[in-house]
Length: 357
Image (tube, rainbow, N blue to C red):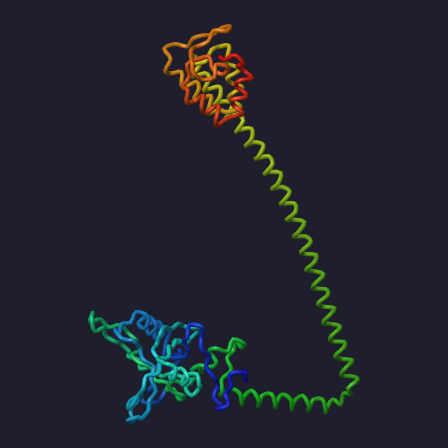
């Protein structure tokens, strides 16, 4: 039993969640007999219907969790006081857990005192939606905080928060566990007495068992290391294969890109053969390697010429732009771009055409 949650009052303290809610178990699947309802059963469908109707708010109002201050003799009847509202819920294993939001600080202190570990739901077996007039199935219309729920075997509130235990330890099980421990201890003592083993013999047996366990663990570890080594070798071989394939694909891609670029260049100069002088064809192709886009613009600008003129010797065309660079009527904007934004192309052009085209 985790004593961390035990209060001075003897109660076990429920835990406040990060969202400010406190959890309680409302319903749990099982078959029951006797009582004022006779034989009855809580099924998974009961839980799912109750949760669905809670989330969809079919009642049209907030579900209250209340304590009975003065009973009138009927179930949950009499003078009551609301301590919380049902904020949400969820199903865990075979239980419907509700998340209660205290209405104020006083109510929160009451809920965290551990006085109430359970809730008994006011469960309507086939609630009718007052707006649509349709029957919605099992619906919780209220929750009564109690320490003696009508439905047995519900998980107490404090146990829903015990993150240290996978199997919840209930108050009713503490004595059972103590009795079992006492019985086991008595059996052990009886066996020791009957066999009459000395402490030395017991220690030797214990040491032998420990050595055997260690030997078994060593063998298991060696086997694991062997398996891991084989896996590493296999992965290394696969990685080497992948790297080889990657290199081959890169070379193929590089070849394809090179062939594609060459085909594009040859296609361009073939389509524009009438716009490029024979004597400048090879030079233009060299300039293409420096700046393809500028060559395309330079050649395309010749669409405005009536015919392509050949220039020889020192023959120049009147132009306000750099006569060292251009010897034909190209668009000045292209030359400006060459001079200002593409220094490499400009230098290459001057080196090929020191006196102009």
